[in-house]
Image (cartoon, rainbow over all chains, first blue to last red):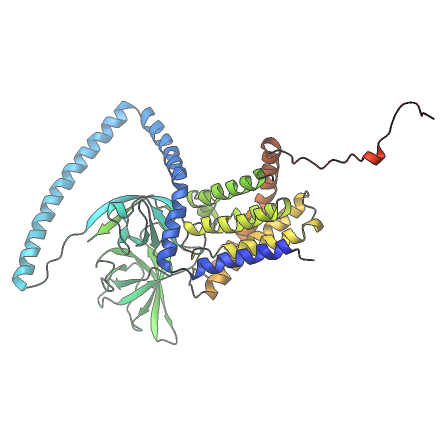
Length: 267
Length: 185
C-alpha cells in the first residue's frame, strides 16, 4: 500500500511546516526578506518592461503637445508656489497662536512617493508591496495615502520594499470621525472580499445622525493615523445588535483596485 | 537522476508566483487571482517523482507566502495535501486526457485555498472572508481547470524539447540470443 519513501516525504513536509509555523514572527519576517530577495532580478525586469511603453509614448509625442504640457505645468507650478507661500504664512500664524495658548505645536508631515510593485497573491488579504524600504527610512505603521485619501499603513519593511496593509483588511483598523454636527466616532473594519471600494464603519453611537454623502475622516485616535485624512463618504447606515450601535457603509475615496503610486507619510 | 523535470516545475512555480502578484488580470475583472501552484502540483503529482512533489509543496508554498500576509509556511501543507493523494493514486488516473486534467485542476484550484483558509482560521488569523469568498473559490477553481491542459501541454513540450530521456535498462538477454551459422556436429 504505502511505500516507505511516501511516509518519509509526508513526515518531512509535516516537520518543515511545524518548524516554520512555530518560528517567532521576527525570524519569519527575516526569512520572508531573504526569500523575497531571490525575486529581485524579476522585479528589475518587470520595471524595465513597464518603462518601455512609457519611453515609446514620450518619444512619439509631437513637439507641440509637449510644449503645451510644459506651459500647463509651468502655470500650475506658479499657482502651487503662491499657495505654498500662503500656507506657510498660515502655518506660522497657527504655530504662534499655539504658543500663545500654550498648546503643543503640530509638526507638518513629510511625504515620500512610492510605486506599487506587487499585490498580495492570496485573495483573502488586502496588501500591496511598495518600492521603498528601510534604506529609505520606512518603518512599520507609517500611514500611506494617495491624493484621494487614506489607503492603509506599512505592515512590514525590508531593505528595498515594504508591505502596505490596505484599509478594508482585518489587520488595518482605523479610528474615524464622520463630518457631521456630532462628529460621531467609529472604527473602519473589513467589508466584502469582492468589493474593496467599500468598507464598514462600525461602533458608531446608536442615535448617530448619518446621511449619505457625509465625509469620513481619520479621527487621530489610536496614534497611527494623523487626524483629518479623508477616508470616504457615507453610503448608508443601519442599526445593529438590537440597536446597541450603528454601522455604516463607506465608499472609499481612493481606488484600491488600481493603485500605482502612493505617498508614505512621515511624522 | 533526471533533474530537468523537477527544475522545470520549480521554475514555473517561481515565475507563476511572481506573475500572480504583478499582474492585475484577472483580479481586476473577476475579483480574484488565479493560483498557478495547484495546477503545477497536479502536473507534478501525475508526471514527476515524489521529490518534485515535496519540493514544489515546500518551495512553492514558501514563495507564495513571501509576498503575502499569510504566516510563513502555511501554504505548504495545503499544496502537499492535494499533491500527495494524487501521486499515490496516479496509476488509476488517465493523465493524458484533457478531461482528467481539467477535473483535477478544478478540484485542486478549490481545495488548496479552502485548506489554506481552514489553516488560517485554525491558527487564529482573520483573513477577509464573506459571501464573496465563494465567488473567489469559483474563479480560482475554474481558472485552474482552464489552466491545467495548457500547463500540461507546455511542460510536456518543454520536457520533450529540452529534457533528456533516462537510459532504459538493457532488455537484451544472452540466453535468448539467436546464433546464426551452421550447426556443427
